[in-house]
Image 1: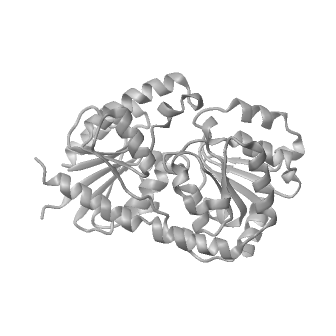
Image 2: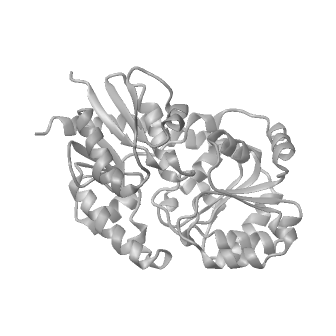
Image 3: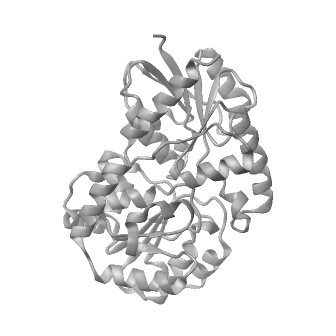
Length: 371
């Protein structure tokens, strides 16, 4: 059998943590175990990629000459695909117009179409055109939930969308001494009793209500609110609330953009609560990661996240501010370690990258035999 060559656009690794980076990392850490496939990982910072995927005979790293997205899509990628005789190229949302191989396109959501109030209008118009163009130019469309599959097929009038489970990396299930981790984080950073939210910043992520709940409940007296993620779109309500807050409150609110993976993991393990109040997600991997690490977690019950029915009483309505406050207060006061153990086991069985990798291989094998 001819060895397949897969090119993976990893430009998201040049920036902060977000769902697409976690997705690529989790899926390909499992896929690279298949020695019948050669993998070509591409980014401007290939040393960062090497620290994630390591060295192996079937792993290659190719460097983009520029971070400019137009140069990357129009020049860098087509040249690299042609030079390395690639069979499949895997992208997130947008593909290059000059096609030199078969395209795999992971479209995690089209939320900007269904929830235009949470997105800048011009950006939504641009993305709807680009996503639809890219979808029709791709042989394979991958997404992570039945919700997203239905929305993509409906909006783009296509029928080549495949749902593959998203997994949680095994490191999140590793055992650790919580008190020891908390003490290390406190000593090094000064943070204690952390309430964490890992997500890029934009209005639909609902950072505003989380911040307001943190202030209204006076949690700043004994807790730190740690928000990890790059800013995609400014949220004026969040910015204004933060700016108007007292020095005492501001000192307890930590905004971090790009952090090292191991550092993020330490922050997560040290946290007493994780809150994910997003209005809309195409999948929603971060709350599964905190559940895996046995961190008490509250999760939005909107859109694709409603498929995480095991959250039960830990679901929150992202539009109901009083419910968000009530459940945060309750969760901080009622630690149930047995429930966290049970949820971690459930997530490990249902959401794992091994299953995702097997589905991925089956899909590209079927596509390979087509003309």
